[in-house]
Length: 286
Ligand SMILES: Cc1cc2nc3c(=O)[nH]c(=O)nc-3n(C[C@H](O)[C@H](O)[C@H](O)COP(=O)(O)OP(=O)(O)OC[C@H]3O[C@@H](n4cnc5c(N)ncnc54)[C@H](O)[C@@H]3O)c2cc1C
Image 1 (cartoon, rainbow, N blue to C red):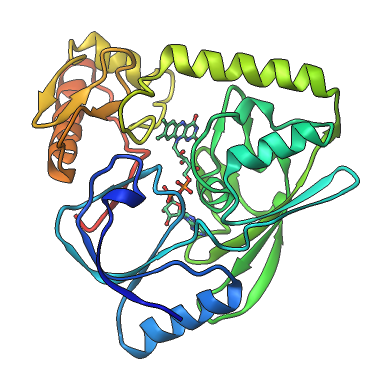
Image 2: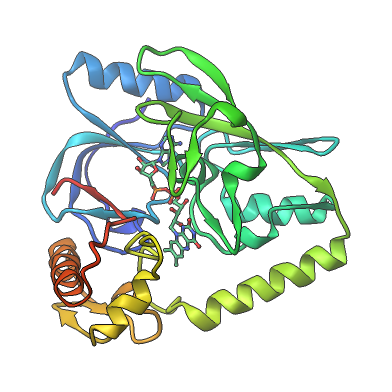
């Protein structure tokens, strides 16, 4: 067991922002994870779970917590017939490449979504009409009382960017059901999806992907653009010129720069369009 102290979280988030974790751990196995959780409980320290940090905005302060990064947790993939088991720390995109190479189809539309399988299951991540919940047969979870249990995909309560069953549990891994596929066709679809993402998204800058959820009957990016906010800046944070639902770190942005820009966008969009935007990005430590 190795607990690091005073670790900058900048290198652990896709925004390249964030303060310092007072305590920090990167478990590889469920047993190690359980030991870290016990240590936090024994020392009355709150913990926070991170995957790839691709949907997080972390404050610039010292986080008086144990930050547990799960990007190494149970990092293996197993295949049995049309089913795949992937541990929480496997990169979602690596799992997709694995399915394609294993002549399986169904996950290609999620190609290029950054982050881990655990984070994708916690967020019900998705793109181009496919959400991870649609493919999920089972999720293995660790409960706050230390129990390990399995929830069927059908009972997991997947909805838009939310998975009710995860709640305060920790995802250890998931089992996914795919169809038999044609590798060449799947590779062509993946290439097309990656091309479409690169043409629409400012992937050249650090970001968290879409900042806001899709409001009923609208697109957040379109509303933000309509309010003339593309290119608006606070410090090193800027509303992307390429996609208005992305706030990019154009260099040296702080968590507060990004948070303040988000607040300002919400106010202006509400005033100009009457639509209340809601964040998809998760705040930590604000
Ligand atoms: C350029 C870019 C493009 C993106 N495009 C998309 C997209 O098309 N579709 C989409 O849905 N998202 C997209 N995102 C957002 C992000 O990639 C997803 O939300 C992703 O699933 C987050 O995974 P993560 O491992 O980074 O989770 P993190 O960001 O580390 O965590 C997200 C949440 O999940 C929780 N969590 C993480 N791991 C676990 C675990 N094992 N158990 C329990 N809780 C956990 C965290 O506590 C946090 O609340 C994009 C992000 C970027 C930077």
